Image 1 (cartoon, helix red, strand yellow):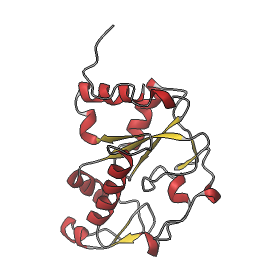
Image 2 (spheres, rainbow, N blue to C red; image 1 turned 120 degrees about the horizontal axis):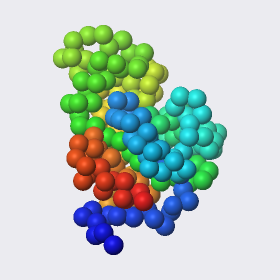
Image 3 (tube, rainbow, N blue to C red; image 1 turned 135 degrees about the vertical axis):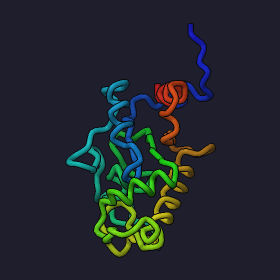
Length: 188
């Protein structure tokens, strides 16, 4: 048998009946990671209804949070990482990009209705919407606040001691074959 050099191989082996559910802010590599996982685990990756909403996620059964975020937040691949009601329950893969790389990407293609066609410097200081369109309850003070909120939620959900089956997949994790292999082994 080949010995693994990874720290958490087979970490979620006991939940292998669960579907892998990829979540991440816009421009964090969700499509890339989903494609990679479909290649390696073709029957275990949760499909989506339409562009962003997951199959097996009942929007009406999701709880509203203290910010009044709409129920589709949980069912969207771009929604804030949170424990949501899915059938069957998921193993989450949460994508996260380094802050500067994400800010440059989101400035170039914001996918939001908040009028961001400004210089990068001005963009960093203007209000920006978390999770898509510019609805008042989704607007944060700056794009950095959006990244911070998402990053903290992802780290809480996939961090040490979290009971939620979740893997945090940073953009730097697919820059080396060893790190990529370790992430795949964690889900194997």
